[in-house]
Image 1 (cartoon, rainbow, N blue to C red):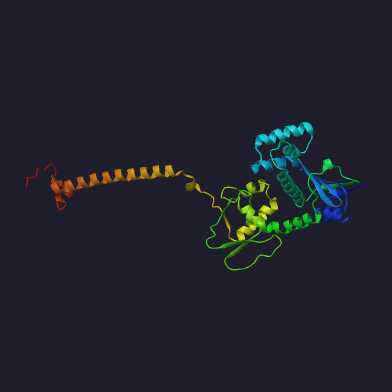
Image 2: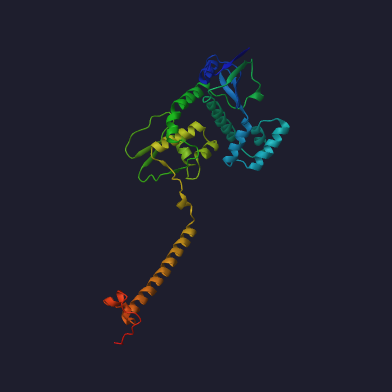
Length: 321
């Protein structure tokens, strides 16, 4: 038995909620012109996620490289083994002994949530749900996740996204931490209300963890690609940190900022040399003018000689004084 339709008839949250409430077991596939996303349902919970064209294994592998947990060479070796054995990438890496299972499980979970939340932005597409009696272990990739929690996070993301994007319009923006001076940082739980004591900044664990990677060099895109948090969590945490005046947007370097300091010094030296030469020329001119005024060797320069000015006297020899 199968359920299928288009996203014009039902939205992603409605579809997920239906299969969650009815505790369905089966394979739900969303397709669009850009690719497809597959969710494995087991008793209404999601126990597997995959996507095309960027497969889950490649996503997780890139995340582990970004986090410096494995090298690019290790990833390529693992992918070569996976191609021969058809094992999951996490199993290969764990079998190679290059990374612990806990790191792989965390990376798989974050990437699975990221893929599911990306579905909430889909406006067009089709869905097809194939009901199954049981799910083979080879199809499972993560510990079962409650669907209701994902639905709540996805709906919240859609509500807050316009507000967040207004403050953070591009993923190329770079943020840097602000000096906190005498302000005190206090961590609170993700599910607790923030306090309002003067001089105290309340940070959620997710905000504090993200703050470690905000260094004035990592762009928003870099923070997302680290894979430590989902895209929505990164944007939401950045938004909160901006509102709490813990970080600021790094000013873009203009043309002058990009000029090397050594070049600036050379320009200053060249300018000083030109000023010195100009000063020397002016000094010489002043000396010439002073000499002419002091010796007065030519009478025609006498200003009160009106005859000379009127060109009446020509070729006249003047007696020496």
